[in-house]
Length: 210
Image 1: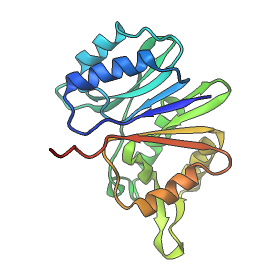
Image 2 (image 1 turned 135 degrees about the horizontal axis):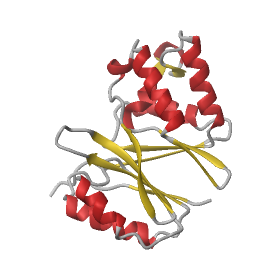
Image 3 (image 1 turned 30 degrees about the vertical axis):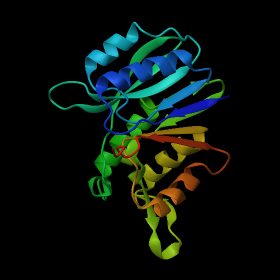
Image 4 (image 1 turned 180 degrees about the vertical axis):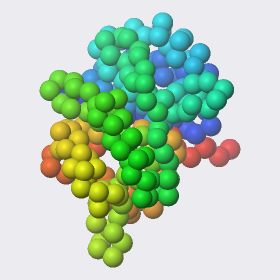
């Protein structure tokens, strides 16, 4: 299986992003195409893309930045067999402070993982984690940045999280902009890719300087 990842320069216009996305999908020879976060800007871009897909082979994961004026943001879409459809999910939280000790939000995220963010393809189980939802994990700085499930004290949530991860073969992580503290992020990526799992991320780069 071939997985291709796409990063854009932060700050590209919506028109350029749409044209690039359309062309990359149609030209790709990969089995799976993972786009960075904020792949497309507005809901009209989704409608236009639906009628522009010619490639029936590639599976693609992309993100819509804004779905309406109420700022429902970071919505996930999948292209399969040339058809574009919503996964009916969006980013649940961004910062670690949002999820720290928040058992209800953690339960909601795990529900999204299991029911909206997982799919099977060619015998592999895929899971999508959006951007800083990686903060469902935490690092123990005093133990060489060892990685744990953030709500490790809740046995039910821990069991559910472990089962989701154990059932997964490929983790896709679309990212909006490069994350800080790459030392900790490296440990989290290593954690997610152990036991013969595969972890892939794609981020917009920092805005190019003139």
